[in-house]
Length: 172
Image 1 (cartoon, rainbow, N blue to C red):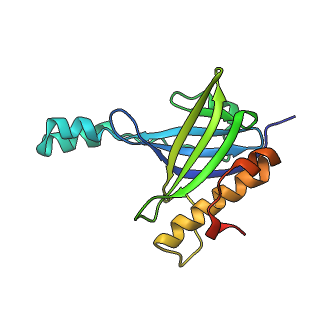
Image 2: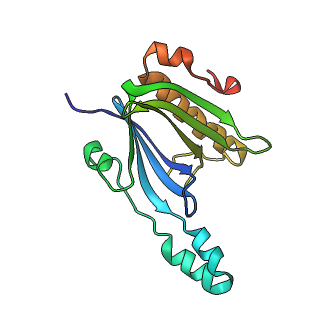
């Protein structure tokens, strides 16, 4: 049986040692695949300082253009920098609005290698996300979060859904 693609979100940002990392999230019926799209080396640029630092940071920030619709999930999962979470290993998912901000954070608690792990990603709209015309500002962030939340609700087992935390004002 072939792995079925459920949805794509380009705009899951995670903290990295040398600056933020931008991931695309491919949801399938079996797993969540966070595909590394860009690493921002702002810390390196800041260490160098000034105009030179800014130029170095820009040169180090390379974006990968990925065609999620045509790409095989197995190939995306195997790409360098990808983070793969089998849905069978998920204990709980949480969506939480950042304090005094319009952004939402997705936290996935799961088991990997016999250990409990947490993945935190800030959901950030990008030009590759399909947003309804006329939508702007905080409504775009809410729409993006609702899309991801609804996708997970459609693929996770009932026991995981019961343990998870959903954004109340976004529940349908």
